[in-house]
Amino acid sequence: MQNLLLKSLLALSFLLSPVSASASSNLSDITFYTENYPPANYIENGEIKGISVDTIKAIWQHLNIPEQDILIAPWSRGYRFTLDNANTALFTMSRTQPRENLFKWVGPIFHSTHVLIAKKSKKLKFSSLGQVFYHKVATVQGDISEISMYQVGFPASNMASVSQLKQAFLMMESDRVDMMAVSIHGFSHLTDQLGFDANDYEQVWEVNKIGNYFAFNINTPDKVIQAYQKAFDEIKEQRLQIKEAYELPQADY
Image 1 (spheres, rainbow, N blue to C red):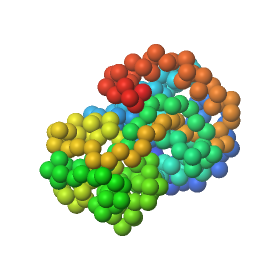
Image 2 (cartoon, rainbow, N blue to C red):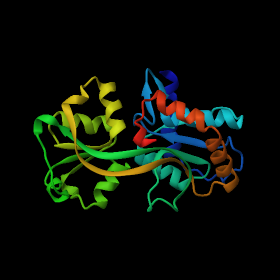
Image 3 (cartoon, rainbow, N blue to C red):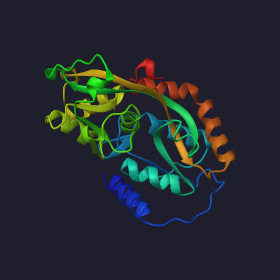
């Protein structure tokens, strides 16, 4: 737990300090940022784990470089910092058209189907997207599920933006909102973590399906990206085992 706290504090100090370093071609000179968003990356018993965490560790092992620090930060802060500073990377990031030329990409690690989840007791049924707009939804600030809601025209006045997935869930559970935007596998892991019965909830609308990647600062040298992608491709069997270990649905491979 002390190690996790230190990494969280380090992340805060990095995010609050100006960085002027130029891009390095050294594979081990990259600082990685992530958030708490299961099953891709999350904290359990004071340790960070998940599909993406195990995958990046397998890449480092394949490249024969030491494990790098993974610093935990709220998504919006980690996003801005990786966007603006050399020698940084952020995961797990959905690769969308607006983001395409802002980062350099390694992956895809897995795919996510983003949906709107509600309590079954609310008995919400929609036959058109327009009907969804009349209900309040909790989203994670800057997450692809929130971005996707904006892209389909969901009114900002009915969107409650929070910093963590757990907060979005608790808002739905306490009836402060009607639904939450989340990936299918993310919701399953979240209910397990919090001790809620997933059968008390249901998917009421599908938003989209998209690939998830490691996103590197745009100034990262191409040879670094190529080395990481080559290692990623070469550990295909190990990546499959990681997905199976986290019980990722086949549809999201």
